Length: 300
Image (cartoon, rainbow, N blue to C red; front, side, top):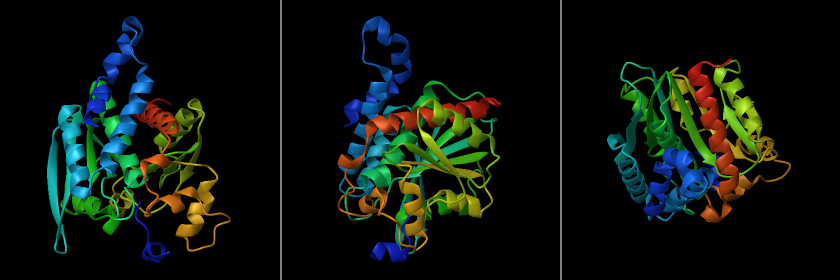
C-alpha cells in the first residue's frame, strides 16, 4: 500500500502442496490426506513467510520467481527505469487460450525498509499467487489469466505505471490485491458499483461469512495506474470492518476515532508475519475465487 508523504513522516517445500491443491480436493478423503483448505491456508502462510524472510526486495522477487517456476508458470521479467533505479516486474501466463480476453491479477511485491513487509504486501502477493495456482489447475471458462507482481509500488506505483506506459496488453479487467492479512471484511475498490463482479463479490463474501465494503473510497495502490489510463481495474483488501472508516480518515488527513490496526502495522517495524491471520485470509481467497469464477461464467 502506497502511503502519501505526510503519512510517511507520521519455505518452498510447503509451496508444492498448494500446486497440488486441485488433486487434493479429489483424493483427500480416499487417501486420508489433509483437508485441501488447510493445505491452502498453510501454503499461503508459507508464501508470506518466504517473502517476509527475504533480506530485500530482490530476494522477495527471487522467492516469487522460484514459486512460479515450481508451479509451472515461469515468469517473464519486465524491467523499467525510475530515475536511476531499475525496477523489475514479474509477469506469468497462468491459463487460457490466446484468443480469450485477458484477466490480469496482481499485487506489489516490494516493501519499505521498516519491518518485513508481511502485511504490506507479502499478504497480497501470496493471495495473487494462490489464485493463479487455482486458475491454473481449473482454468476460467471465458478468460485467459496472467499474474503480475509489481516492483516499486512504494515509490509511487512505478511498476504498474510502467506496465501501462509501455503499452503492454490491456486487460479486460485488472484485479489487484494489497494488504490482505486479517479481519472480517472484504474491502473492494470499484469505480463502478454496477460492475457484475461487485454483486458476485457480495454473494461470495456472504457465503464465507464475511462482510463486504465496495466503492470508490480506497487507499492508493496499483489499481490507480490502470484507472488513470482508463483501463478497467478493481482492488481487494481484507481488514476489520471497523477499521475501514478510520483508514479512510487517516488517508484523508483527518483524525480517526481510533487508530486502525493497518496504520499501526504497515510501514513500521511491526509489519511481521505475527500479525496476519491465515484462517481469515483463507475465507477471503475462497470468496474472491468464487466471485471471479461467477463473473467469468456470466452468472446473474
